[in-house]
Image (cartoon, rainbow, N blue to C red; front, side, top):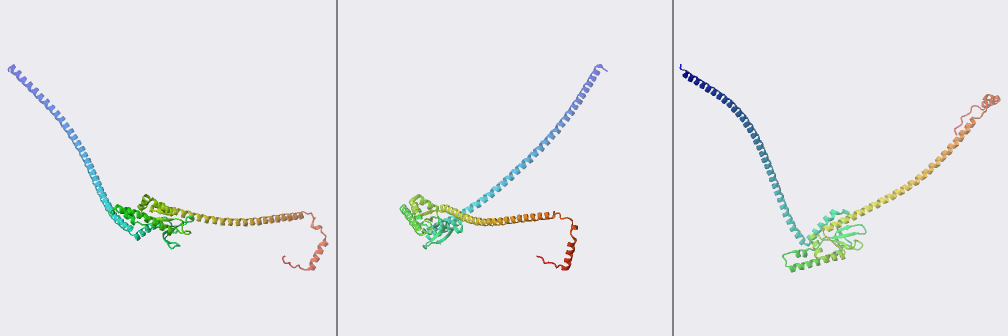
Amino acid sequence: MDPFALFLILLVAILLALNIAAHVRSRAKASKSEGLIRQSLVRLDARLDEQGRRQSEEASALRSGIDGHLSRGFEHAERTRGDIVTRLALIDRAREKIAELTSEVVSLREILADRSARGAFGEVQLRALVANVLPPSGFRMQHVLSNRRRADCMLFLPPPTGSIAIDSKFPLSNYKRRLDTALPQSERERAGKDFARDVRKHVDAVASKYIVPGETCDSAVLFIPAESVFAEIHAAHPELVEYAQRKNVWLTSPTTLWAVLTTARSVLKDAAARREAHAIQGHLRSLGRDFQQFEEHMGKLARHVRLAAEDVQRAQAAARDITGRFREIDQLDLGPASELPEACGDEQETRSASDGPRQPQPPT
């Protein structure tokens, strides 16, 4: 064979061997790269699974939070709706009460317009005030005086104050006309003057009817059953207040009458406390007299006990003397009994035999 051909064959073989080795090496590298790629893919899948799980958990937590917020929002909305319904019901009741008060104001206006109804209204208000402050024994409604005048209320206070009459009727017709805006200004001014004249006449009537010397105190109370009227008199007609003071008539409103009644209650309580104190003082005086008698009896008993003790001491001294005498007699030396003469003994026996048996003597 030709050496050149052999060389070519050998060269081709070497190249084939190198190509095969390169191919094998590339296949190994490819296998290794494929293994790395597979591992990377596995790790990527694991990370994707972990990320998916976390996102799932976060989505679940977010969904739970959203559900909780929605539930709380629905509950709050339901409570708000309930509060709105309740407040609407309260508003309806308040509207009904306002309507009732409006009708009551209209009826009150009608009461103030009618003289007899006005007197009854003032008397009812006066009775409620007095009954809420004073005890039943401290007042009497519709009390008749000795001059045959009937006071709406009589307060029974202890001396030096005495009884106080209260009148609850008050002229309000001209006062209402003065406040009527439908009337002309001149007529309203004339109504104001007529109102002042009515008040002055009523103060005179109260002073003449309900101040009775020797039966009531030197003052009476005129009850005005409206704070606005009371304020109007003091603001626009101070001369009426001075005139009433000169007539010893106290102008009072519901508030000021409450203060007067509270003072009267304090006076009644103080009088009751003084009565109780006097009763206690009387009982203490009686107890002192009883203790004085007890002291006298104890003195007499002490004297008797002292005399008895002295008698006992004298008896004990006498007993000691007698006991000493007996001891002295017992200590005397009389000698033996055998040395006594026999004749004496025979004579004593003969005397006993002749006398016979002795009868027992009755006890002395």
